[in-house]
Every structure is written in structure tokens, then in C-alpha cells.
Image 1 (cartoon, one colour):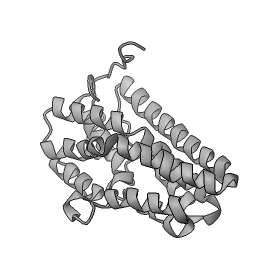
Image 2: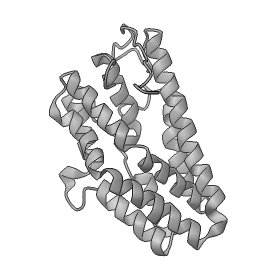
Image 3: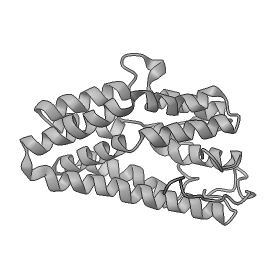
Image 4: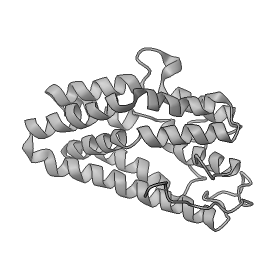
Length: 226
């Protein structure tokens, strides 16, 4: 995104991300009544930021809906569900499964912790990419907000949320690690789907309605110093 993606590929990324981002934090909120003490307090702190800290215009879901509209896409709650492949849906469904089952509260915590601990640098690169491609500032703004929250959120998710649950309930450690592994595995598979589709010169979406089938191939380069 930061260096090589085309404008059409950037639009596709927004469509994929919309399945989660238009509902951002909602499935994690199921964890509030399932936790206690320090981990519960940490989860509420993280979600308060996700929900805009009492400012509706700063709610992450509202920011993403604005980004979609600014990019010329449909900002409706379920507008993209039929356009994305199964792997994109699986990433969101995993959070819902963890949140709806009390016995999987550790997995929900691990999933959120892994998400927060790996989102700051990618968000900065996404923002760079949308700016490079000339999108409206409100598109990059969604990702800039995640960069601003940055490392403080990472520490809170790792130490205060996952760490405190592991200390207070040592039996949950396996579930915490499982949830983190599920996030990383599904994220890796989704990324592989997008990049392989684009490398082959075709759309990563299921639907042809968005006219995304005529794409220039993307060259995937290794980061400098790797």
C-alpha cells in the first residue's frame, strides 16, 4: 500500500477492511461482562477509545464510514458482505465466536491484544499509501487515529489486558495464546489472498459489480533491510 498499490487495489483494501471496521469494537464488547478486575478495566479503557471517548465523530466505525464515502464507496453497515471472500468473513467471525462464548474469553483477549500490538506500523503505512494515491484526507484519517493511539494502546493491550488476565487466571494463558494465534493466522491468510490476487492481475473480491477485474499487477517487494 505505501509503495506499490494502485488506486483500485487501495479501494479493494477498504472494502475488505469494512467488514470489521464498520463494526469496530462491537464483538470485543461482549468480553466486558465476562472479565473482572484489572483485565475488565483495561478492556473498557481500550473500547472507550474505540468508541470515540464520548465524541461520536471520533468513533472508529464512524471514521471508517466517512473514509468509504470519501473514497466513493458504499458506507452502509453490510454493503460489502457479499463482495468479500470467505477468508475476510472468517477474520470477523472469529471475534464474534470468541465474544459469544464465555469459555473463550481468554481467546477474545488474546485476539484483541494481538490486533492492537500489530496495528500501529501497518496503519502508518496504509495512511502513507492513501496519501500517495491522492485520496481525500478523511480516508487516511481513519488510519492516522490508530497511529496516534499507537504504542500506549499496544502496552495497554499486552500488559494491562492480556497480562493481568494471565496473572489473575493462569488457566487462561493457553486460550490467550490461542486467540492471538488465530488472529495472526487469519490475517496472514487474508493478506496472502489479496497479494496473490493482485500479483495475478485480478480482483481480490467476489463481486464484479465494482468493476475491479481490470487491475495492473502489483510487485510485492521485501522491506528494506530484511
